[in-house]
Length: 603
Ligand code: GLC
Image (tube, rainbow, N blue to C red; front, side, top):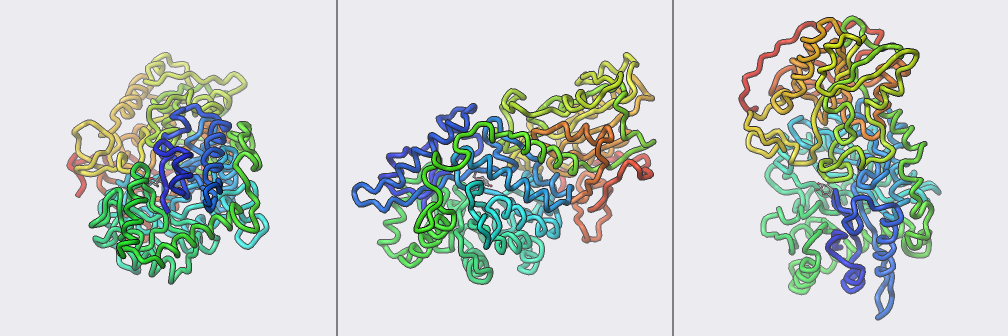
């Protein structure tokens, strides 16, 4: 029932305290080694496993399970395939693809010797100011529902099939239950004011397909529901999820999420366990939590029956996953398929799936004069801070928690958008990188591709809050206006427009959410929403140069002003509505856009 972080527990302590699970947080690697190989991950997994199954001294020898945030591929691990983040997959609108991505991700988790991914995120995201918008597939429950069960099937194998928890599958997590994407103002870990009906119809639809598909774990969310913290919300965790939905796997708490429950602390929280959290994610103070919880059971604050129920659920999942009991199929991590095989990480067939996902995720918002598709024989100026930046195209949860403090070298095997463009030009075509666009004045180009957008962030660091830490040091007002956060992007467009007024500009916009970009749109002939495409940047050139037609359709409404909050069917008029997406055959009708902004924080 106690999950510890790998940097804060040893195998000997796993044995001594009968710890049932470990996790690594984003940016935590075996031995703190950012370049840890599949073999390094496997060696540590074996050490924890062997300690856990040691029956000396009359121990039960229950095998441990190690969970990781493999949320867009096995993204923490060097060399892994990074798929587009969920917001881009939502635009691809292809459930079959999602199942294939889940299966490929599971294989790359198995290769490292781990058992469990904290994915998929099933947030229905209602306010784009939320720093985790990109972890959601959509603002609307329809796509979340269509995808959730398929991703779970890809990760775990099909329920009621021989393939369930087969050798290439791992345990999935439906998260964060419930209402993570609907907090007031998009405030991460904040208060969701939805009614029960809205909780079900808007925020519950992912679970409506993930649970029937057999998701074995659900992660409790940090947010409150009308003022009551989810980690202590017995009516929803037990009453709805376990009793009404008949969920018989186990609920895992989020990272020290229990301490936000009134009366709780990092090292003790009877209220969360009583509410229905079966395993507590307590990375650092796991020992104190263990000891305090035993005291709370002995002192009567926690019923023994609740402990038995939680342990039963955890053992049930371990048995279903093939780790325990008469149908054990999985011995030590090093005895399993793909164990330690570095070649499985970033395997060509996985990268091909990711490149296909990039192609399908791109949404064409503007194409004045049918600038796109470009000819392979074109002479192309490539500009923008994100043209040759794997970190910027990968976003948060990429090698590190925030996706920062990394360079292209931390993503071996990955392809930048610029490199993809270089590979796409032929027959006299050329691609020249000039990040600030200064080369435009040389006049030798047929088009400019300008790759700009957000820089990586995760969770609350990405919040656009009047008072919150949006990961941005400047003192400007917190609105959806991109140019306030990244004026350098507008500058490069203006540089090119000034130096070469007739040069067609194709803007590729990388972001974890829709943003107010009317100024950037007005300076672009073509504008592509590329979201956070991950390691296979060549998928962008595939579409820009016409190897594949645009098929992406917005799964999030696109705002036409700095504070517009607009969602499908809410009566608002978006600049580009949910479901919008041009092909290169479509007649572009977008005129000059208003560039007004008040520069005051959104309320
Ligand atoms: C984080 C996230 C959650 C993640 C967990 C473990 O704070 O909220 O999505 O699975 O902690 O990294």
